[in-house]
Length: 347
Image (cartoon, rainbow, N blue to C red; front, side, top):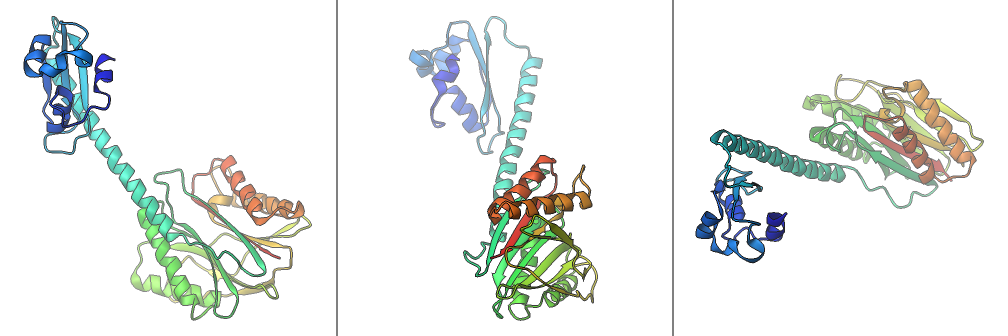
């Protein structure tokens, strides 16, 4: 503890054994207090003084010469019983391994921070007010690997006055998945600005991805909702079914027409279905991590999520509380995949 207390807050540019080892990457071996006094007189008085004359030190850097300083490993021992050359070599090897591990940890931390920033930049900010609709979203990354993934959601106004809602899942749980997700979402927005029909949007997005020979694929559900009369036009590209919850507590699992996932097969058309979202009812769009897992079949997961949504409407909970209920149920079954939830209620 004497050395730890003495070095607390010590600048790296100080001419003392441990800062020198960190700064230069050169090991420092001090055989006894006499050598310490000779080489670093300032370390032999006051708070820097070792507890006795028979204390020796071995200070091994955690970074090789020329590398960015990472730290050092200081060991004290009885100067009358110095470590053998084999023990000194062993200590040097351990310090080298610790330095490599610390370097990897720092690189991984930087990678995670960069990846998280990429993901956050890819996920949209929803409109603050959608006339006639209440919308809530939840997103949680996979617990396997980096805290990023390929799931996405979106909601935006269309030129015809309707609202587009989409949810999707790009293959993978890494930076490339997040980037690909952003490309798909941006492409769909750009296409919808000129041709808002969901089937056309998915057809043209698929054409774009297959033409680019995209290395990944994505599932997606897209809805075109007119809040004035509740008309919904929807289609799906290999995505999980939609949930339709009512305020009497009931729900329906609605499987939309469509086609395969985006980015695999060219020349695919995505047929649409039209239905009505009644006032006070809600649609729940989810990714497969919400309704499927190691101990949960897709059918059971959809039934559970639909039951929770219907119960929330029956109990007059708002869409934010409904989204929380569904997400909490996912966490309770130890999910492994990314999860995204998009709840839409017509007011």
